[in-house]
Image (cartoon, rainbow, N blue to C red; front, top):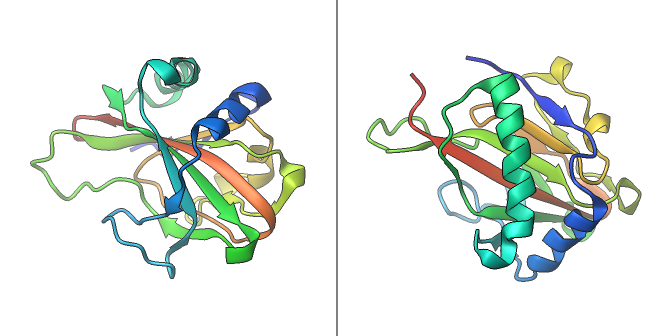
Length: 185
């Protein structure tokens, strides 16, 4: 299977990033994949944005870019996306997320699985320190500095191990989107 990490620098405008932040005003404790709150694994807050008429101006550029990146680099059979997750990592909590994968590939009866993950930097880099996205098993393929600019999108297969290092100053916001399709063959 491919293990590409694709960085699309400045893929989204500061205006779009700020619109996403304005739409994500109800934050709750971040949960791990099984729905539990475990602050040994993750310290963050999350908000969700549904795909509806009010959020079309956000979803359209995300889907357009994802389609282009997927066709060029991954060629995964993707049929839909989950709701958008906005994540807030705060200095006061030393917000982080230990390495994890986004998908569960053990249930062979599942109709769809997460295939492609996208993380978009919503906060300008001068407003926080730490909080970098990292790939512990693929360090040579990814330079975290390349992904720190506001509006930069990082695409990777959902089965790749990744995490977020602790925020040491300020607040970092990111947008995460998971794209689904039938099981890998």
